[in-house]
Amino acid sequence: MSDNNQRRARRVLAQRRPAPNRVQVRRRTRGPSTSWIRIDWAKASAVVAVVAALAGLLFTGISTFYGALVARDQLGQAREDARMRAEDQASKVTFWVEDRDLKRGHLLHVVNRSSDAITQVEVLIIANVWLLLPEEFGSGGDARYTFRLSGIGPCTEALFDFNHLYYRFGEDQQYQPMTTDWGARVQVRFIDRKAVVWNRDWDHLWTGKTAMPEPEDPVDVANDRSQPSMRPLDTCESN
Image 1 (cartoon, one colour):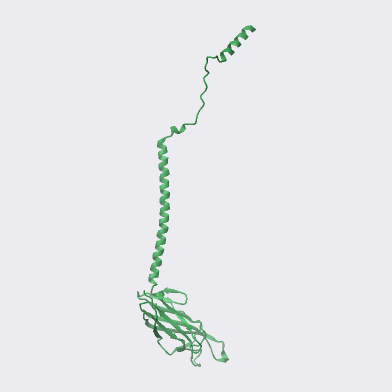
Image 2 (cartoon, helix red, strand yellow; image 1 turned 180 degrees about the horizontal axis):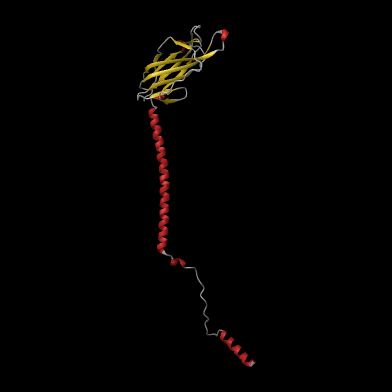
């Protein structure tokens, strides 16, 4: 019994042992994945189309954004050019004060450097004045002078001599000339060649017929010369 079992075991081992002429089949090892071969090209084309459409929308959005920026800059430049053209003549109308000695007083120059006349000129001067009487030294007030001119010609300046401006603090006093330290507010109103009303003070230029300033502490004033003197300029700017 035991011999039969041993013979059976040897037979099984012999069958399992490869013979010299027996080729043992080797299992095939799996190579690199070739799943790409099985891509659904219809879906891939749809994905590519969607990506291309999104890229096109992005490019269009960027182009529109920068186009809007350029258009805004161009519009701003056009408005600035229009403003400069509108102010072309008005910007050449200025004023300044010649600070002379106390005996001669101050001289206000209202200058039109443009090649066209300005019309309906109104010049407002509000000067701070002081009482010159020794017993009341230190009292002050505002002297308001308004001059209305039919116009100032091209390349011309109007001269307002403060020696011809007078003031007094009461009816019981005599008029005295404007020989105070310069501390005046000046505003000039005029109409340009395009019938636009302009205003200018020391710092600003604007349009419209706005109210002229009023003195805070007015005094009685007088002017012995109704019109200023006119003088041609040495140089003139073309419009």
